[in-house]
Amino acid sequence: MIHRIFPGFVVALAFLVWGIDLVEAAETKRPNFVFFLVDDLGWADLSCYGSTFNESPNIDALAKSGMKFNQAYTACPVCSPTRASIVTGRHPVRVDVTDWIPGNGTIGKFLHVDDRDNLALEEVTMAEVLKEEGYQTFFAGKWHLGEKGHWPDDQGFETNIGGHHAGSPPGGYYAPWKNPALEAKREGEYLTERLTEESIHFLETRDQAKPFLLYLCYYNVHTPITPYKKRIEHFKEKAEATFEGETPTLKEHEGNSRARQDNAAYASMIAAVDQSVGEIVAKLGELKLDDNTVICFFSDNGGLCTLGGKRVGPTSNLPLRSGKGWLYEGGVRSPMIVKAPGVTQPGTESEAPVVSMDFFPTFLELAGLPLQPNVHNDGESLVGLLKGEKQAEDRTLYWHYPHYHGSAWKPGASIRDGNWKLIEFYEYGKVELYDLANDPGEQHDVSASMPEKTTQLREKLRTWQKEMNAKMPQPNPNYRGGAK
Image (cartoon, rainbow, N blue to C red; front, top):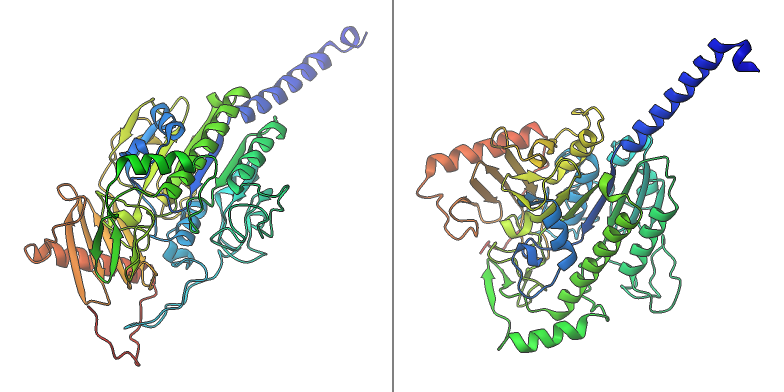
């Protein structure tokens, strides 16, 4: 017998096999990641963030099982830049994607600022890094970071279900849609349900020897606002029983903001997302993956609240001001929930200001991988916060949005330093200063009464813009109008 003739060989072989098993065990202990990204979901759109009209029981349950962030920010008040910031850990200015792709090209007092129409392939994404470390990488839903050749499967995702160049669902939410990366299976199929089915199929058929990143980006609740047929009647009845009179509005510069959450169709779209989250979380439990899977929930910008002219958006972000497209809090503050087993405590909340670039380094640290600060330059790991530790020091956050937007926003930039926030409006030649600790709704501009703080923050913002080589809007030589 070989074990009698070569006992040392057998022992060595046993240790070799045991060592391989230990390596494989270590690999399987790396956490999985499930990232839910909702399109245009407002900070106040969920019941766990205060909504009394919209309903989100499954997302509320997720918040109770992990940590809810009350001051989480997107890197931009529109979609493509924030999406780029999440997967790269880099500020939109640094990757030169500062507007939704391709933007609308509007000019006024200033000329259009040209930025990239795709996320450069040279950029290193979290999917690429995790894939190199043995992770399976799966993407489903909205991508909106460039034409074919710059899709998810060109940026580190092994599987791409529905991710392509467009920002809103081509052909609508119900089949027959016209998504070049997702063919409908049946007439009348609902897009969100299909993306959920595909995500669950991945969970059921994945390589069980490897950890995974499942990145599900819903097209909901982006326009066109389309009722989710299974829930719309409930919210219509709720609206009729709850509200009287026309929807109130608020004037916002040259636009108008919705001042009440009462849109039944919009609420039904949130309900569809909530149902999807519930189904995927339940599947993780069924597959016994919930104890080793980090779940993140986020939005790409504030809810669409303000529009130009007499129109208003489909939601209200009150008590925050304005919404998508604007650098007021309603445009850049997002709901954010993180459940990290063994790290977060159930039902905890954080008031620390965090930003979309932080996901990349956070995932690396949670996976036990070294941080790569030369890659995710502008993000910081949130693992300490997830453990319940206090933020080491106040962060300074910057926004640069030198474009015109259909929400009636005109070129500008912003800085948050501690609890102070300054917004610079280039079109109007003015700045506004707010104390967010006492005025989170940004109703009391104190720039005139605090000139030193205003000057300090304005100079700090400009210094950052110069260091980042931010593209500044240039005067339009043909402009003959006057800013209001």
